[in-house]
Image (cartoon, rainbow, N blue to C red; front, side):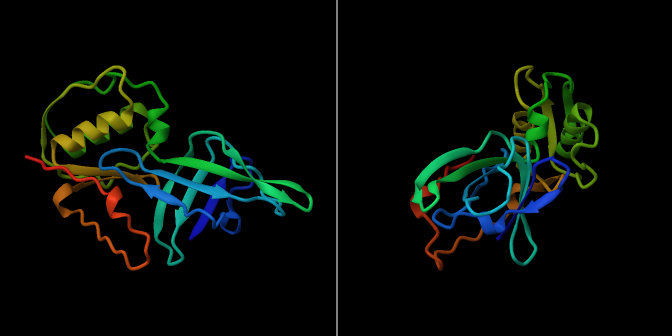
Length: 211
């Protein structure tokens, strides 16, 4: 697993892979039609790596080159006491990052997108993204999707909440990854679970019947 962090300090994306604390696995929590969350621990002792800054750009990829997550540190890292070494106390840094739509969620939005009537889900999502922050997310790949009967945005809701309402009402799944906004039919999304490596927690799976 390769972890790069751009602290927006002019150095660009820096490889933090060697600083990943192996005592706790990095977790990626994906919820249907909601932002993806990544959490993990870093140990910077003995390295020259800077402490990750809030709003830093985070990219997580597999060793094969597959992009698993792209997003931003939504909060400051938290120092967790890990013990004492020969040079003094040792701390791990706990970090939490939110997927790309976090940049849109930070901005005031409200009902600026306007009411949509009998419009394809892809069109509504595109308008939601481009009216709020043109070019922040690439919407060129958005296409199709069932029609939204009535979409009436709420003044106090974040962008991801609006996007989730649109996707849920049209049986689709949206995802913001690598700066690109995608929309796919929920029926075409397949998740494969395997307990071959002992990491699958069946008790953590949550299911519900849908009409």
